[in-house]
Length: 317
Ligand SMILES: *[C@@H]1O[C@H](CO)[C@@H](O)[C@H](O)[C@H]1NC(C)=O
Ligand SMILES: *[C@@H]1O[C@H](CO)[C@@H](O)[C@H](O)[C@H]1NC(C)=O
Image (cartoon, rainbow, N blue to C red):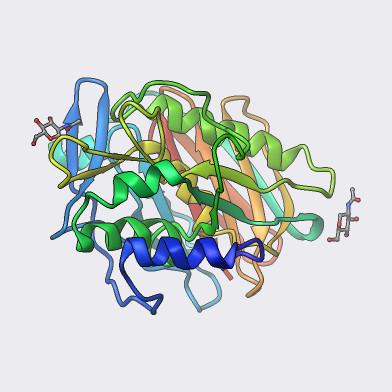
């Protein structure tokens, strides 16, 4: 939990959410996709919500890559090994459905990861629950409130640190006050791009990111949107996942390490985590797939093909 936790607020919110803070034993469950004309969301209700156990391998030369994409991947996990001189295809959601190997013309990039070159320590990511959100949450069933809480604040979810905002307008806003667009990949991508730029333009003082976790649709856009018509569903926006690619895998105290790349439409950042494992985040903003080679000074080489408009967290020790 965050050092910044407001303990009284914390207990208030916990009592509203109606659960004890305990280690949840959620298994990995895939997103329940729902399509709008504007894009794809993942639906959570009392009976179902998606989760991901941290797939970081414990063996050397093994990697896991967690992927999300415009076309519908949401924390999809692929495992493999360094130095096998093969290409790992991260198939996009529509390719999996259509069983098609076809991909648009590819670009290619090379990322050099060097954990001996270190920059700033991260301070972590903070999510806030405001008074207005508590009022919305009260109207939802207890088990769904628990899913909302777990999705945001536990390791099976996106592991954001918790803070309760007293009053309004306190948090630094990444999202401008804007109407929700259901399933907008562009907004999620924009957030990731902004954050990557922020993380890469260093100074050793990274500010924590604050955001509201959930809003009703009149309240604006947020990572999760509550259905205040039926009070039975909550929608995880693409933003929830693009944010989660950072928050879930880069706990406070992780140190940024060198990760060079030269493609303007691919953004990369890498961290050495407290447990000495490496997390490399790759955002492909190209409308085409990209061949990505990672050259790690300790582990050697691995090659992926990643889909258009997608984000990936590559994990290895
Ligand atoms: C940032 O901090 C790290 C230690 O955490 C240090 O090694 C590095 O030199 C610092 N970088 C700058 C630009 O001050
Ligand atoms: C919210 O629930 C209502 C009633 O079940 C449904 O008609 C509506 O489409 C839902 N809203 C969204 C954004 O899915």
